[in-house]
Image (cartoon, rainbow, N blue to C red; front, side):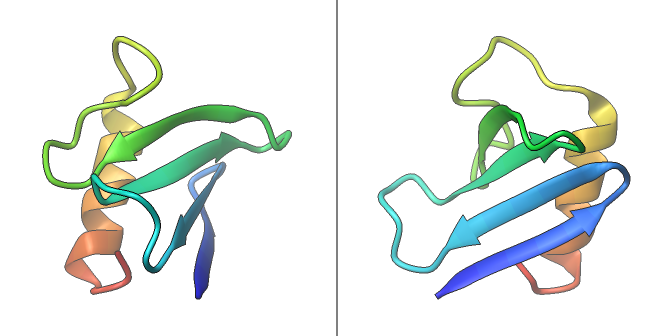
Amino acid sequence: AMGRVRRGGYVFIWWAGDHEPRHVHVYDKNGRLISRVNLETMRPMDIPRISGKVLALIRELKNEGRL
C-alpha cells in the first residue's frame, strides 16, 4: 500500500512494507525528489541536511498517525 500527502508545498510518499529503515520520500512541488527521511532518526538519507520545515511537516504527519 502506498500513502501520498501534499502539504506545505511538498509531496510526501511512503510504502507499507518498503525496505528498512522506515522512511518517507519527500518531493518538491515540481516532483523532484529532495530526499528520503528516516522516520526513526528524522535524518535525511540522501543529502547532508534537510529544512526544519520539512521535519516539522513529517512530525505533523506522524502525530496524525499517517506515517
